[in-house]
Figure 1 (tube, one colour):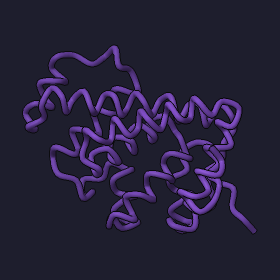
Figure 2 (tube, one colour; figure 1 turned 90 degrees about the vertical axis):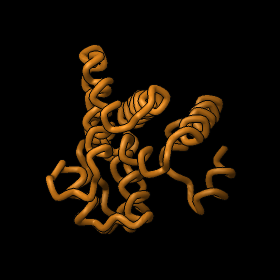
Figure 3 (cartoon, helix red, strand yellow; figure 1 turned 45 degrees about the vertical axis):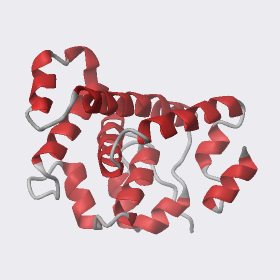
Length: 180
């Protein structure tokens, strides 16, 4: 597992160390991600994940998925606006609705009503796409909670990609350890 992670990332991400006692669980997680990502647009997946990680206060996932959005062309200022829910965040109405819904899934899935589903449908989302949003947000709960409960710090590479100031702003929970 470690060799494969090093080959993929060029270093050993802390998330692999966290799952080191149960490599099969990490393999299952990876398979779930492949399945989820196969059904959802990449940007939508990242926005759902960011909304879930924000609600979970997961520094690891905030930095990891913030770095993906930056890699894909979102500026640091735009990312901060997205995270803060600013009116000038570079999101269309559908994306705003998706992030609000994903947050609600994480906060209290039992509070979701048919009205919430119907509201998403007004943004041209299908039942299958709504399922994908729910599944991605719910899956993030498992992963973020596991990393946080095991004391997993965000990888230093995310701090390097985002810059220390933005990384600190995205660290909603566990502090980011800065290298000296």
